[in-house]
Image (cartoon, rainbow, N blue to C red):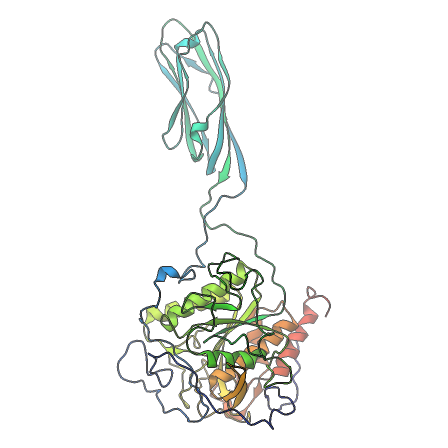
Length: 539
């Protein structure tokens, strides 16, 4: 596929007449959890000890450091049992019955029934079916049926007596027997019919017998359920402090759960969370996304992505094209990693089981994790996002020129095809911002993250700076690409973003592409894929 690029020019956030004339509100740093003391992404490393070599004094002014969350091992505000979406929850699917099944097994032994002896015959089932009903069909000839005891034994050893010396003259035992006693038993294995003669001077023959079994397969693995159809605009999850859904620039940009009734205190959609109208609070296991710290940060990030084009404040990169799901409480309740796992499980469940069109998650946070067990947990969680086809757009650290190539910076430095990591350009989009870290092995591209005007709680707008502001610019571009061609995968959008960067000499050796985000070229590339995608109609 040939991708055309626009002439190289600075990439900036959309503005409207009057924006530049309006004085910027006073800078306000992101609200932090009371126990959080980190000055950058590394001085609260999980293993403790001396401050790492990446520590630097951060810039002053409107700079907001990329949040690192509570230290690892912080006790949760709620017991683990309170959370529906704990680690590994999504991977566990219930074992349940499949479609009804009927089985038949028969034998024709034509075996002689001798005086005072027991004759046996067997049939077997290979399929594991939980019985709802079992019928035995028997053809047993005998000169005096009052002499016989007939029993059936299941593979588990359960035995039921069908006939026990009922008396009578020279009659055969022939007909069908309904065996309700075997309900719930498994069919798999060998079934044994025994015929015991209790008297002398008579003759008999076990001609034939059969079993008709009806039930449901029990299976040995998770049930494959039909996946819900995804529709509507792409949903971008802002995983952060909560997003102010009442803000005049965001109220129409929010994803709204169509299957919940606001304020009734009931889990209407059965997803394990009550009143999750706009998303989920991972710190407090609730639908109150604005509870906890970091709401300035989360609301600012959301506005960069999707603030409305309504003549106020700023216009988001994907204004009118995407919806915001808020995953709040990231810096409260439990440590960053545990909260991340909870949020991932919620997103994956909402997409795969409830049909929410979640296409990307913005992660303007991170920290260094030096122990292998934690790195594996981070990687496993991001792999769940990959399996659900969700793009992770992650901020690199604000390390004032530190190289992160050999740093276990989570989740930004996870090497999976659904991850794209972002550094910050200065406000002129001319060079790497002095507060931004870099790494040509772990950071793909840069975007403007200095003096970015966006929404904050209370119906206000502020300028903030940091890699936290550059990252949602890329997430907004991804949203535009998903809106252009809904059939693009997370990995495809990541690759197109990488392929369409505008090369900048200041980024050579600092990011893997040597380039900065080119929104127009990326969206054009997504549009070009429509020529090869006949399943997208009306384009």
